[in-house]
Amino acid sequence: MGLRLICLIAFSLIASCNALADYALVGSAYVPAAHGEIDIEKIDKKQILVTVLLDHLVPPERVELGLTHYVIWFSAPGGLPVRQRALEYDAESQTGRASIPTSLREFELQITAENGDSPNQPSDLVVASQQIREN
Image (cartoon, rainbow, N blue to C red; front, side, top):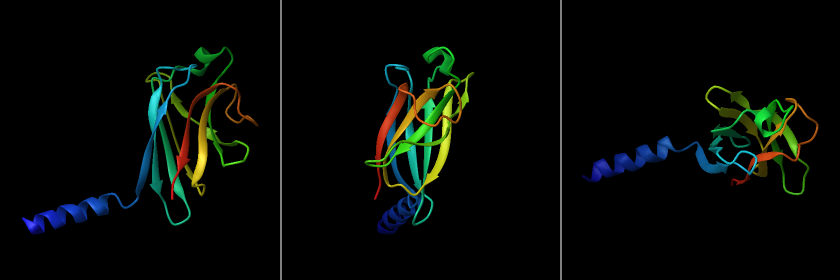
């Protein structure tokens, strides 16, 4: 019995050695049905991998006419938003996904609806956001 418990604890520690945390994502008033999560995984001592998954995400043109993409932004404390990449959007399943490596450990993640995949600054159409803080 004792050996089984030790093995179970050891397996749990090994399985979670790279996992840091998960954060919930809830859609804003622009896309209230959208929900998902942000998974954080340690890559190495300096970088983490931020994976964003969203479900029930309507096509951008349904948020506002002329919009074509959802874009992810990171804002460090006291800093301006920095574009990371466009969300990989699947209109058929209404899902969005992106994985982004970063050295930031504290930042706000925002997803905005945009009229292109590489805008210079975020629009006011924030569809989801979350504060991220990792040690």
